[in-house]
Amino acid sequence: MDTTVLKIAVIFIVVLIFPCEGLDCYVCVDTNYDGEIHQTCFKTVSGTTTIYTCTADSGSTVHYCGTKFVVTDGVTTSVERYCMASTSDEDVYTDAVPSSTNCKTYLDEWGNPTSTTECYYHCTTDNCNNITTSSLKQCSSDCNIGTSQGSCNYITGTCVCSSPYAGSDCSTPQVYATRKSCVQCNSETESGCISFTTSTTCPGTENYCSTTTSTIYDSAFAIVKSTITRGCTSNLRAVDECRFNDVYTDFPINDASLGYKEFNCYSTCDTNGCNNGTADGIINGNEAVTLQCVVCTDSVGAGTCNTATVRQACPSGSTYCKSTVTYLISEKNDLRHRASPTYHLVSVVRECANFSIPTQCTESNVEAMSFKKITCSETCQEDGCNIGWPGRPKCLTCSSSQNYNNKYDDDGYDQCRENPPIATPCSFPYETHCIIQEHGIQKSYIPGIPRRITRGCSYYDIGNECSSTMIRNITIQNCNYTCTTDGCNIGGASTESLQAVVAAVVFNP
Image (cartoon, rainbow, N blue to C red; front, side):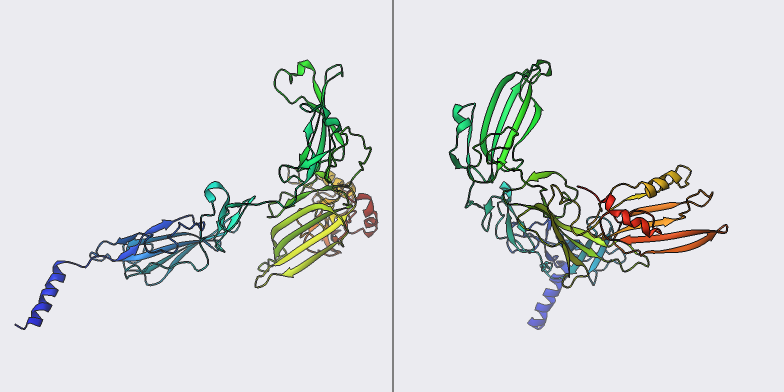
C-alpha cells in the first residue's frame, strides 16, 4: 500500500476515535458597567478575560460562542460572554445556531427607564465573541472611586471629580485662590470679643462674615448669661435679625420647668472684616436694609426650586431678584386632540442680581432632535418677587365639582365663578396662557342641566368664543376664554366686561 494513502487512513481513524474538542470562547459577565479600568468584559482584553473551552457537540446540540448586550434607554449597561448550547439558547423555535442577531425590547411608556433591549450575538469560531460597544469608554484609572473622590464618565472616558478634588484621576485637592477674611472670636474664651475688629483669613470656603449674640434669660426675664461669637459663614441670612428659642443644651438646663429661654440675634455681611459691629436686631451704624430674594439653584432639573419661597438677604449692590428656567418640550403630533407636550425640566435658578434684564423667553431647535430648548428669565425689585415661572403669567385656578351623587354642585360653581382664589404660578413653565372654560352659564338652576366652570393654566390658546346648544328649548352656551397676563382669567368666559377687574386679583408675593 502506498505510504501516503496509509497516512490518510490513520488520520481518518484517529478523527473517528477522538472527536474534535469544543470551541474556545470568552466567558465573563458585567451587569453594572461604570467605566472603571478593571472592567474588561466590555472589551475582552487578552490575558484578563477568561477563555473557556466549550463541551464537544453531541447529537443535535451544537455549541457556539455568544454575547448578550443589554441597552437601557440608549446606554449599554450589561454585557455577558459565554459558550452556549444551541438547544438551550434564547431561540426557542429551533435547535440550530441562530443565523442572525436576536433582540427583545421591554417598553414602559411612563417608566424610568422607558426602554430595555437585550440583544444576542452568535458565532462559531474560536474566541469570536469579542463584539464590543462603540460608544462606551473606559477611564485610564478607577478615579479614586473607593474614597469617593471621583467616578468615571464612561461616555467620554474621563474622570468626574468630587469637590474639592481635581486631576485626571481625581487625586489632587483643589486650592481656592481667594478666601474671605472675617473677625473670628467668641466671648466665652476671649473676653474682648465684643470689641474685636481685626480680621483673619477664613478656614475654608466660607464667603460671608457673621456676628451672633445669644442671651439666656429666666422666667423672670432676668439675663442669666450672654455670649458673643464672630466668625465665617456660608450663609448670608440677614442684616441683623433676632429670634426666640428654647435653650439648646443638655438636661437639666433645657428642662422647661426651669424656665430658661434664649434670645438669639445674628447679623451677616459680605465684605472682609465687616462683622465688627453688634447683633441686636436694630439697624444702626453701617447696617442697611437689603433686598430679600429667593435664592435657590437646581442645576439638574430635580424640581427642588420649582416652588421655593424662602427669602435670603442679597449681597451689597444687588438691587434685583432674578429667576431663570430652562426646559425641553416635544410636541405630541400623533394625537387627534390637543395634549400637553412631553416636558423635561433642565434647570431653575433663583438669585440676587446687580442689574435688570428684559423679561424674555428664547426658543431654539436642538440639532438633529425633534424637541425644543426654551430658556426664560426675568428680574424684579420687590422682596421675594422671583417666585413662579419667569416670563409666564400667574393664573386663577379653580373648578366646579361633582358631589357624591355625581351631580355638579351649584355652590361650587358659584364659588369658582363669583369668588375665585387669587392668581398663583402655574404648575409647568410651558403653560403660557390663562383660561376659562364654562358650560351652562345660566344663573338659575335647571334640573338636569349642570353648570360648570374651570379656571386654570394652558399650553394652548383655546380661543375666545362661545357656541350654543339647545336643551329643552333652552339655549346653553359653551364658552372659552384665553389671556396671557397675571390674573386675567377672572369673570365669566362670555362676559368680556368682567375681564377689566383683573388687576384686583393679581398675585402679590
